Image 1 (cartoon, helix red, strand yellow):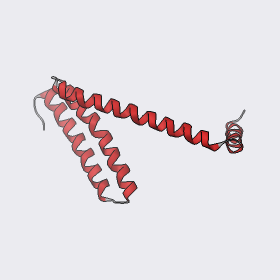
Image 2 (cartoon, rainbow, N blue to C red):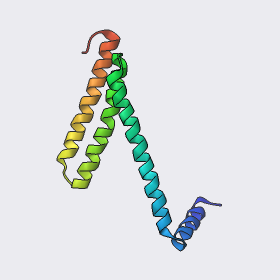
Image 3 (cartoon, rainbow, N blue to C red):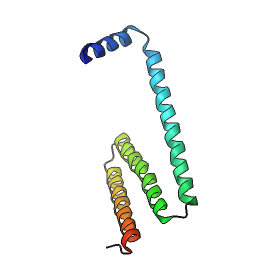
Image 4 (tube, helix red, strand yellow):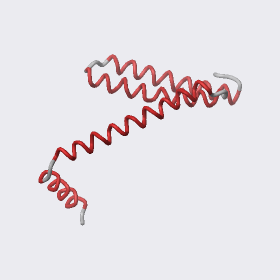
Length: 112
C-alpha cells in the first residue's frame, strides 16, 4: 500500500471515529514524556552535585543547560517576546564556549 493511500485511510478512520480518544492518547503521551524528561533532568542535576570528576561535571552542566535553552525558546514563542530568544542564544553560546574551554583545559592544561 502506498504511503499516501495509507495516510489517507488513517485520516479517514480518525475523522469517522471519536476524536476525543485520539486527543486523550496524545495528551497522555505528552504527559509521560514530560515526566520522563523531568526525572532524567533531576537525575542529571543530582549527579552534577555528587560527581567528583571535572569532566563528568562539565558534561552534566552542558546537559542541564540544553533544556533550559529550549524552555527559553518556547517561552519566547508563547509570550511573543524576542528578548527571551536573545537570552537563549547567550546561554547556549556561553554553555558551548565553557564546555570547549573546559575540555581544552582538561586535555592540554591551557584554555586558549
